[in-house]
Amino acid sequence: MKDLQHYMRPGTLQLGALPPLSLYVHLPWCLRKCPYCDFNSHEMKPGELPEQRYLDAVIADLEQSLPLVWGRGVHSIFIGGGTPSLFSPDGIERLLSDIRTLMPLQPGCEITLEANPGTFETDRFRAFREAGVTRLSVGVQSFNDAHLKALGRVHDRAQAIAACEEAQAAFDTFNLDLMYALPGQTLAQLEADVTQALALAPPHLSIYHLTLEPNTYFAKFPPEVPPEDTAYAMLDRITEMTQATGLQRYEVSAYAKPGHRCWHNLNYWQFGDYLGIGAGAHGKLSFAHRVVRQVRYRDPKLYMDHALAGDAVAQEEEVARADLPFEYMLNALRLREGFSLREFTERTGLPANAIGQALLEAEAKGLVTRGLDRVQPTERGFDFLSDLQSLFLPG
Ligand SMILES: C[S@@+](CC[C@H](N)C(=O)[O-])C[C@H]1O[C@@H](n2cnc3c(N)ncnc32)[C@H](O)[C@@H]1O
Ligand code: SF4
Image (cartoon, protein in one colour):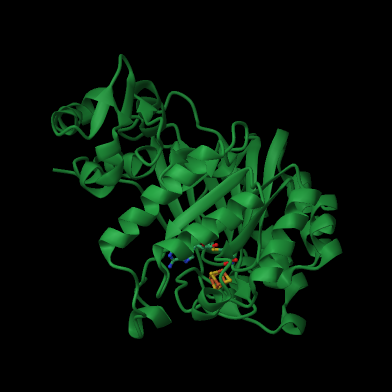
């Protein structure tokens, strides 16, 4: 890693203050690879997980990264994957206590762990809570056994319900992940999934349109998914049904009760900073005159070897000044509340007039509304989000 002087040298951006800092930790293994998944996750038999060595590597990675975030408190931690709940509660406890030794955590720091219902055992979730996790994110995807099977999930409906009930009982807040527009799914089946999810009263719900990602089994052997107009009708039903139970759609795919928004994801969408450690993890860090992106080695074994040898970062680049408006909009316009011009300037180090022309165009097309300082996507802007975002591409 380059020394700190390199990051602090003069540049064309002027960031008045650094944004809040989050920490992302990637744990890259799953019991079985789902056919739709393009995340950096690899199959592993439960007894063969190299838990200790991997945690050693992650902590070595963190130690090497500290000079870049010196003195900054951590507002949230997200332990994602892969299937982090495959790790033992003792392992998670060790990870969190090592993080606490190395970095100051802000009071009330949100600590999320992703859990798969296939790894659910009654005492396990409570033990994660004891280890310091404050929020569980449960990957349910569907409550329909036939759809779960088609998605290659390792759990069934009963396990999904049991996992959510335990998350509800053991944590003050939790998230439930669903996907829609599944192979062969009808509108009535989607309604049944959402009804079941809402019956479990999750304070936070994330609902994603199933996408057939390149380099997945589904890309090679595409299943038949509902046509686009059915998928739109599904999203409309999701919006109506969630609203009726007091969940607010605060981001394109995220719905929350008041006080239960995911702080960590909000920080991404507000173009905050995050240090990403673990195999293939992405990070974004700001300095007085530049914004830097990093990616760690993707293959778990290669990552462990490199991190333990003191060089976990596979790629690093400065975000070009011309790319910053679009990168900012990729995040901020996903939020129902949009952003303020002051925040734009604070986070990108660019003057507001850098997006003046694009904003005029977006407003003329009815894709955003503008108040004194605030810019918000309209309903139409939300529906045609990628068109709206592309107005901010470099000219
Ligand atoms: C990184 S995954 C981790 C969650 C956990 N491993 C699990 O699957 O239970 C986070 C979420 O992304 C969503 N997801 C993954 N692949 C997707 C795809 N191809 N299309 C839409 N959503 C996807 C799923 O809802 C999943 O729960
Ligand atoms: S369990 Fe989650 S991370 Fe693992 S393969 Fe399936 S969707 Fe991907």
